[in-house]
Image (cartoon, rainbow over all chains, first blue to last red; front, side, top):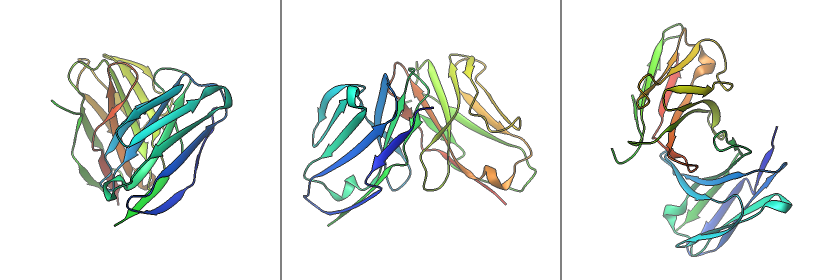
Length: 108
Length: 111
């Protein structure tokens, strides 16, 4: 099956810093989503991005499908950005294979 | 409702008990998913419904796990004869197209 690797596993930054999170996947996908799980466990859908680039406020994402990776950029990070960021991919429109996540801690 | 809701939020069961976890999806969402999330890991797919039809149950870990969505809206995940390894957060998500929207989860602890 498809393998998903996220890096780095942990990231600690000061408020205001920028960060780049990476997701590598082992096979062609037609479904890729980025999620943020806050410290209370709630999963929030950030982007559906099987290819191309999208931006939403301070967050943006780029997927290069031919090279089997996706990047999530967080600019001017805030303490509320803390949590775990997951990349999930799939070759169908429903079943997602999830990475292990990047745990982000933003210090004030 | 405005989002996906799940109940109960927390459930403690003695080993061997049966439990039922409820998911209320976003109104009008055709697709509904159940996931299991162990501590420190990403969610793992359990099962998928399109309306009332269970199209994929390949992720259910054993025949003690059963899910239903009889009227194509609310769904129930039932676990019979719970075991300690069933302790996890059970997440429900719904979707109208591709993007999945998650509920807050039910944290199940089996003693």
